[in-house]
Amino acid sequence: MRVKNKIISDGLSEVLEYLPQNVVSAVRELNREDIDEIRLRREGEVSVTCRDENVLMGIIISGREMDELMLKITDGSIYSHANTIRQGYVTLPFGIRVGISGRAVFEGGELSGISDISSLIFRVPRAVRGSGDYIAYLLRRENYRKGVLIYSPPGVGKTTVLRDTCRILSEGENPLRVVVVDTRDEICRGEKFGTVDILRGFSRAEGIEIALRTLSPQLIICDEIGSGEDSNAILSLRHSGVPLLASAHGDNLRELLTRPFICELHRSGIFSGYVGLNRSRGGMEYEYTQRKEVEIR
Amino acid sequence: MTVKLIGALFIAISSFALSSHFCSCLSREKDELGGFISLLNHIRLEISCFSKPLSQIFSEFSCPALDKSGFTETLRERGFSEGLKKNACRLNLSKEVKDILLSFSQSLGHGYREDEIKRCDNTISCLEERYKACLDTLPEKRKLIKSLSITFGISVIVILI
Image (cartoon, rainbow over all chains, first blue to last red; front, side):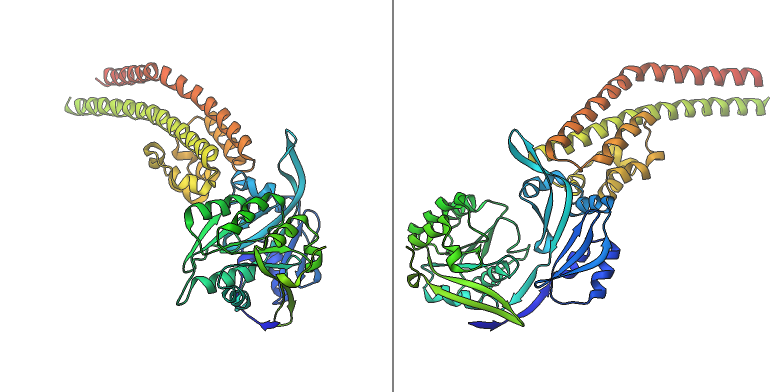
């Protein structure tokens, strides 16, 4: 199924507020509407990702500029973002995610932080009106008894689709009580939707547990599941009657179901089906596969 | 004779005002030092318990001694370093204390939680030592200033008359 969606807001101007002036000018001169990422490298060239194309900008970022940028994105308080830096990112207002690469620092055998920051990758967030219509339809069709798992490679728009689905289901005539476990603070980006309760910064396992225990949700949304740590919490939803709308990285369904954790979720029947996302010109393509159509040997 | 008496009275009042001014400077130094110790304790607490960003930590801090010098206002708007630099001449602190605070402020926020807490602890203990010394010497310094002012005033009056 192919749906044409309209981009209603693009976070590029918000991203540019953080960048050095020469980078801002170069990006503006580039004049492209499909910028997904801006990549800055210490003593290396700045590049811009437009869909699958990487454009070199011919600008070198000095070590000092990189350090200043790091302080700017952490509001001059690196320690206050230590948890997410450890996981390789910082989330800025408007749901801008900045990926961080550098040298791992270990303390007592455990990763305690990242030093010598070598790259900062600013991902441009988007709100796409209508991108969640199809997912909302699938959930409604199941009478909100079973969830849906969205998969795609990184950068295609899983979070954008989750955000729009969240908006659709929590507004209108019969809004649902939606709980968003926003581990990376990206789904709701500080926006307020009708009947949404947001658990910001919680791990998926903790968030789901708290949501079930105290927030009596009719739908739980979380992004990028895929680790075994989440499995017990997600499996606990099986008997709770609360559907889960989640996303996971994956090129295709076959590859996705080779992962033991996803395979376990498939067997448990948490999801009624799987939706693969693909970007096409002017819209998003959805490839829906019902759970019962999938056979696992 | 009347002119001489008026002159003597003027000198006496001036000496008294001068000694009061110096004494109040000493008190302000002590109060400001105490204010900075409270600020550092506040920063340490907010970092260790809540990991709040500095802008939020600064916005929640208030201290009359530092408010008077305009430091708190600049702190909230432009940060610790800028607050010190902009109000350097209005703060009654020794150069040594200003240097300690400046070096602390320049690296504040650049490290992880444990480093920040350690840095806060070190600076707090440095400032507390100076605060204690300041408290100990304050009565003696006040006495000295008062005696010098009185001696100066009396000498000038005697010379005049």
